Image 1 (spheres, rainbow, N blue to C red):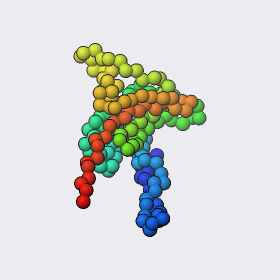
Image 2 (cartoon, rainbow, N blue to C red):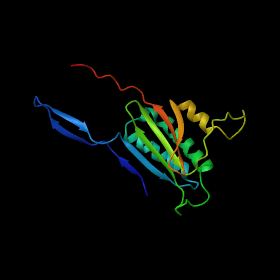
Image 3 (tube, rainbow, N blue to C red):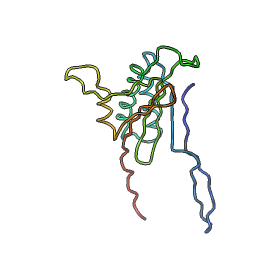
Image 4 (spheres, helix red, strand yellow):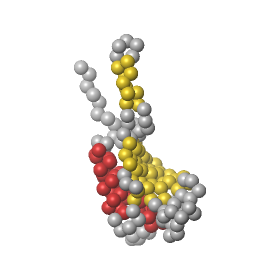
Length: 169
């Protein structure tokens, strides 16, 4: 299954004084992508994240969002991938989801492992164990939770810059 993107929908409602209001009918903007677990997985994750962040006009945080998504997907593919089919016979997958909140961008990666992610400081010259320290440094916060009976979701929240003030007329 490919990308799924849902945008906020509005309806117009006439107010008691003849004005029109807009009511949100759905959740905040949300986009999800099924990530392949081959050598192109990080390229896919980076492109998907950059495209969504640009579409949502969040370019000031694009580089950090792309880096966070890339690190979380790398961990999911490397440490969270099941080598055997799921109990129902289906193949395990990794999902990357982004959700725009009023003051933050939420990045969530789901995999089929229940192994808990651990923040372990890397040795000074080590090439491994740098992903979660990078996520921690770039994000406002991160964490994880079990998801269903066969997986987990690892998330990171990236603060958005304040909206520019609008001048009064």
